[in-house]
Structure formats: C-alpha cells, structure tokens
Amino acid sequence: MNLLVGPGILEQVTEHARQAYPNEGCGILVGTYAAERFIAIKNVAQSPTEYEMDPAELIHVLRGLRSSGEQLVAIYHSHPHGPAQLSRTDIDRAYYPEAAHLVISLADLERPQAAAFRIVEGAALPIELHAIV
Ligand SMILES: [Zn+2]
Image (cartoon, rainbow, N blue to C red):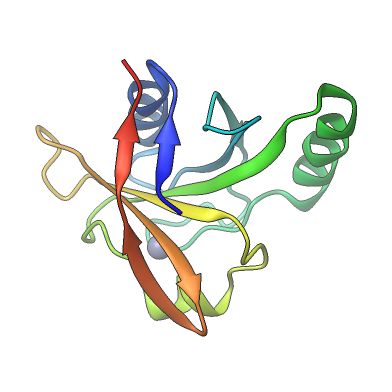
C-alpha cells in the first residue's frame, strides 16, 4: 500500500515541479512494483492552482505501458504554494483511483515537501513514501 520510488526519482519529480513553477506540474510514475520511471505530462490547465494532464499525451503514454510491462504506480502533481496534501478538487478529479498520488509542495522553495496518498472512499489516506537508495 505504501509508495516505493526508485533511486533518483523523487529528485527528478522535484526538479520538474521547480521547472513548472509558478504553475502546477504533473506527470506519472510507472514501474513493475516500485515507481521506477517518471514521465512528465503537460499540464494543459497552465495554472498555479490546478492541473489537468494532457489527455492525448497521457493516453499515448499509458498505451506504451502495455508493451513495456510497466504499470501506472502513481500520479504526481505539484502545489506551488499549497501544502503537501490533496485538495478536495484533487480527490474529486482523481480518475485513476487505483494509483497512489504524490504531491510535491513548493510552498517553501528551499525545502520542497513530498507526500503520498491513496484515495479511499472519497478521502485522502496518507501512505508512507519510501525512496529506494
Ligand atoms: Zn492539488
């Protein structure tokens, strides 16, 4: 139930969040059992307070997983100013309930915070985030 991420993945995701700043960044983490690969997806909302993964890009990437044998492990997005928590909107718009959700908060740019959740019955349940070193 916890979210395991491969070496360097959290760093890649945090770097992506910084590049997307001041807008939200988003993407997915895929792998066979842990989140072993980060794939950035364009945020078509282009907003500091919401994200919407480019549907065409997402479908293309998810199709590619059929041949690579990887699975969708987690969905990531950043909160440029908000906390490392899922908002009500994040929960309501979670189209892939089986995936974990990783939020990177840049509220303190010097010290980004990462937190992981699962959405269970319409509520965000915090889960442990483990980076494999
Ligand atoms: Zn959010």
